[in-house]
Amino acid sequence: MLMDMDITGRHQLSEVRRLPEDTAPDRYLSGTVALNIASDEITGDWHAEMAFFRPRRTTPRCFLVGRGCENDTTPLLATRGVADRSDVLRRMGVPNVPEHLYAADHARAIADLVLVAVLRNQSPEFVGLDDWMPRPEDKRRVVDLLELAFNHLNESQRTAVLAWLSANRDS
Image (cartoon, rainbow, N blue to C red; front, side, top):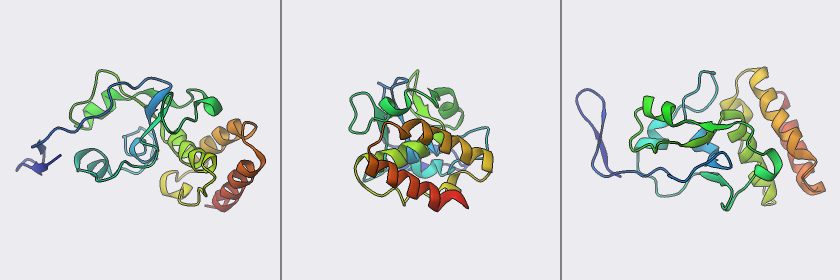
């Protein structure tokens, strides 16, 4: 996608970026992309320019998660924290938003990043809770989701989640 700004600061598309049209509560945007969707809370990343308006050479971590996807945390968390965010994306000025676009809220997006890493037997250390969740109550929402998933994980995955929680406890 090629994009320039006009004199009003609005984005001018030279080429169309496509968001997935087949999202649902159990197949949704998550990870770093979902963290860039505006929220009434003071959480998230707020780099919408990078997430939605600039061309990317790679797909961000956890772009599309759920049923039929490479990464699926719905067996662990069902559809908690997933909702239709199409109206929010339109208000943000994102082009070509489908009628319905399901995405994780910020707590679910972070939980997905952590869980996808441990399900792949990778370290989730790249996920810094303070980067996106500034208040204790926001962090608690992430912890609550990880606690829901905990009993569905094997011992090494639980150990990885506990290590991540410990590293992020005082953040």
